[in-house]
Image (cartoon, rainbow, N blue to C red; front, side, top):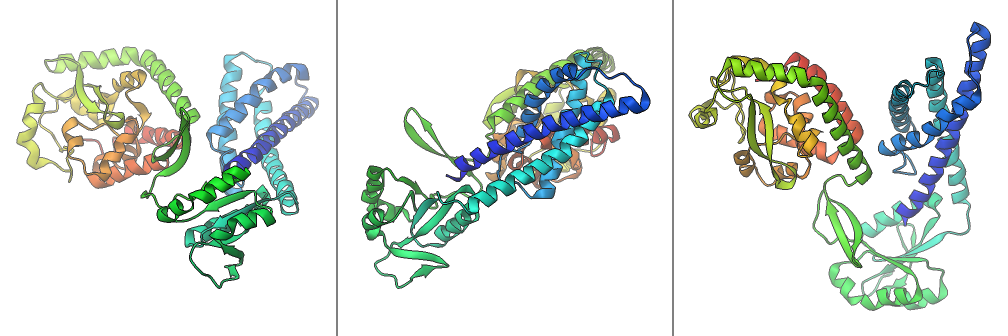
Length: 472
């Protein structure tokens, strides 16, 4: 109901953004033309620039979509939306400049890209504001409302009805309530009409215009009203049931279908398949490029490790990944051979309050390993894990098998996201943070995941690595 109508109006925003971007493009060209007359610089024909516009439009929509600008029709508030639009245009313009350079569109000047970005920011925000005002005004005065009848008069039903009334611009309206008890003397329910008992539903469907019926009732009451659900189905009236009798706290709920079977899904992990696909492609391409560029540097590190102490340069260790999948995690060896067996002897020096082991001035660390750990260079071979798909650039750090087995129940939810080379823990203090806080940061990352959050963590990782803050 709300989602479908929200989607239709989000398409209106998408069309509005396209129109604003086209106008911004033309304004930028006109500005560049005026710039030419003042400074006597060469301006290529508009037909040349139009080739660039066909590249910009789908790319702009893609970036806007990934940053969630078409997720909610109503928007998160003007200033927050303005910030989101600013981020989207900044990222898209930066990538546009890179694309212009890669495609060798030498006729496109930096002045044009900058002016286009500025025009686009103001016009997108203006057009979005106008679009919302027009549709909201039309929605409040429309006559083709979809009328919704509520069955059940509990607190959940009231909150839902109040939420529906807030979305009058989406063309929906609460007709009234039906109580589920034996008797009720109420003529209205917090401002909404009470039309009678649930037993009166057949008569009300005969007399009133009812487009949808929403049942907000208990599981026991639902069994008693099966005939009413079948009646609505027979009449072709959309029926919905508020699923407030299932035990869940933080899960997001959505309905899916598989081979004709309706599946009610509770999920606490990100389900934006498009964004996750983009993340995987970025991981693969980024990992491949970095391995190629850093190959000589990686070879030198491997050589130094072999010279400093006997043993292989690469350290392989089994770790738990997504939902408990085992994989081999790669690192540059920073300790002497046989260090794993000596860990039990040093357990009293553990600085964490959980199953993870962190020790200052660990005697097992080699001379080269000390510098590798300080600069986090021992993690570089994990680019192979990113390339293989075992890990991502950003995510919860993969723990040792024995550490995962000692996790408390709520802490194991960190396994529901693919592990990463860096994450919130690394940019928030690393080993200066206790274990429970580390776990909470991982769950905070999962609950708030977005491509923009990944980008922010990657950018914050750079100064943290350079400073060696929190490293041991």
